[in-house]
Length: 310
Image (tube, rainbow, N blue to C red; front, side, top):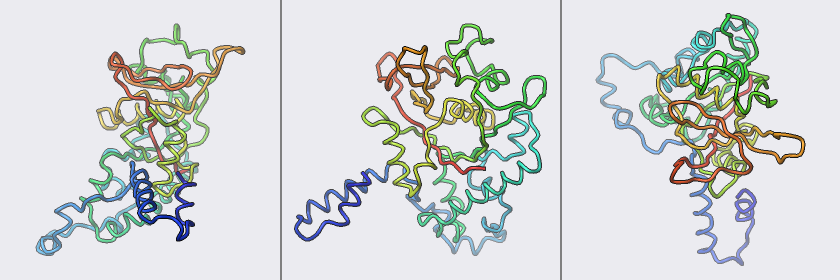
């Protein structure tokens, strides 16, 4: 899509303009897929005279402390570091907290300076911004987690399952097909903030890598900022947001993660994907992309997230 879009900008007079306009409109339509922009100004924000008559003035969002700005827009879908510490049973070091705040500030700068959003921040259109981010959450992926004994350990699929086993099928590792796979104990190496999209990108006809590139392109992001989730990151996001919101956040699908494995040295590489079934998180593996079937009505998809490294 990027190549075609760039070519349309260099095409000369020899091309039929009606064809060119049609092609450009189709490109714009594709780019709009999950583009982060304001589709409509809320009625509460569109009536400045009503605000001037209001005795109690609403504080400008840009004047609030950093975390309070995100809380104003996202509500409980912004999981502040202090809240995350309580959920994970950890205590972040002052050094780690400092880098967390620095990264959060970069996330704010990215949001604030987006051409599609800046005027709404400047005009304090809080309701409009809240509506725009209804399908998004902002979460810190921590490299640390507290185990059942209160000891701080690396955050991996194994330690997540140990601490939050009610989210999974079965009470022990015995019988788990993935318990002996390398990815089971592979940790989240470095913490980062992530802006999570509730809706998945359908991968029935397009690979996850292509869908994510389209998502990145439509939002003016580098491919590195929209990296495909690992299975640990996918499970982490689901658990922590469900704990914070007391409800599931993501749309259910066969979520195709970036994690792969080989059952043995001679076997072909298989993909790991996740989904909900019977009120529990399920982790499955297969070659290729899972297919939609009436008996298992979950579309194959990829859950996009925008990364802000710590």
